[in-house]
Length: 234
Image (cartoon, rainbow, N blue to C red):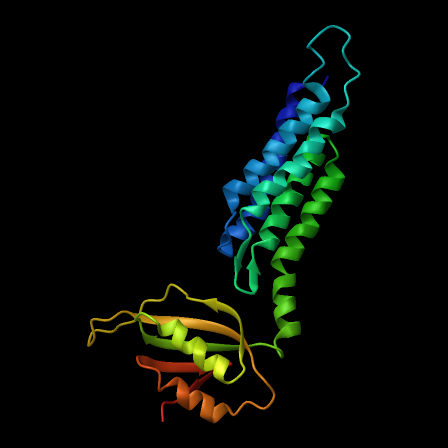
């Protein structure tokens, strides 16, 4: 039978590890953050503890249970939770990394709940390195394939659609659209000023000057920044 101190240690340790992974997801504004990862990790640890030790006192002499049977349901069951973080918009799919982090958090919780500390902590270390470091590594590797187009414009209905049509006209593929929470001083105009970041893949034969000139022809556009360079309005 597992003593009380060991039970508390395993649950607290699983909460800490799940929380560390959750913080990284929270910082990057992902659908499942700190609380979700803690709950998954702690819940998995508890189920593992129940599988190992929870049935020993049901009746005298009952010690032949299979701890793997209950724990195995966590591995498949957490998939439903992960599926809720995956979003598909046209040809783009987001949330796969967060779904995977929830799934691995469940595995870490099971490992800690089983007392397999080395495996759980080492796995958590690899997960944190992958989430925190490999993202910037991917951007460096693929930065030649994708460029950032920043457009600052008066916010109005159909704005993003018109920009998308222009990009399509020049065979430019949109990989991602991001709208940061940035406030602009627009005291001379009652309209809201919006900043939009497009991650785009450009064709080799793109006429940059002509394309950027047409960006400013879109109603409301006041500033365009392409690949870190501010483009003046002609």
